[in-house]
Length: 238
Image (tube, rainbow, N blue to C red):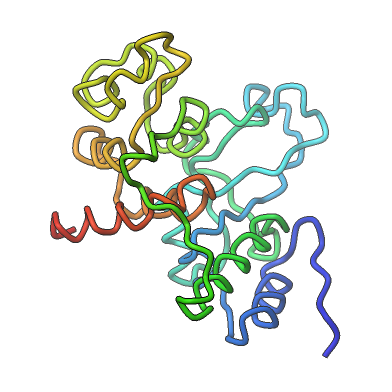
């Protein structure tokens, strides 16, 4: 069988066929979502929602990552319902009730995300002695910076996360997830422990654990922390 070539944004069928070829096992939409992939839907420009599109007068690819929207898709819904997404400037945006509906055929999966997932699965499938070890979240691993925190978690909270990180109060400060002394010379040097931060977002800001689990599977800069995250959940009985 010749190799399947992925387009820039693959349909669900194209994504499943390509991953089946890469992994030797069948794939479904539910399995794509379970593995942390974030589908997008192209939204044509609509003058009724200028704040959503901004200068993107041709439309843009809106990500579907809100836990309720993902759960509905994974359960086998007959269409796509988007209630929360990011606008054309990649800022969190809640859509007017009841949300936007699109056909399942409109779902697309970015090529880079599929390739990254395939690489991760192939790495995990190799015998342990052949694997290149990914550094664990040890003391030598300092933390992730503000930009990484925003990329991983800003879409899940109904607050100005950038401002909260700068204020460094509560879970966002040295008594919470910020690594002590990391901001001593300059706040630009501040880094946060993503596991501690994610647990705080769940406990204090009620971010669903399922949503946070997807974050750790969706960003390559969080792969090294995933084992600590899973171990923390196990110890907490969650």
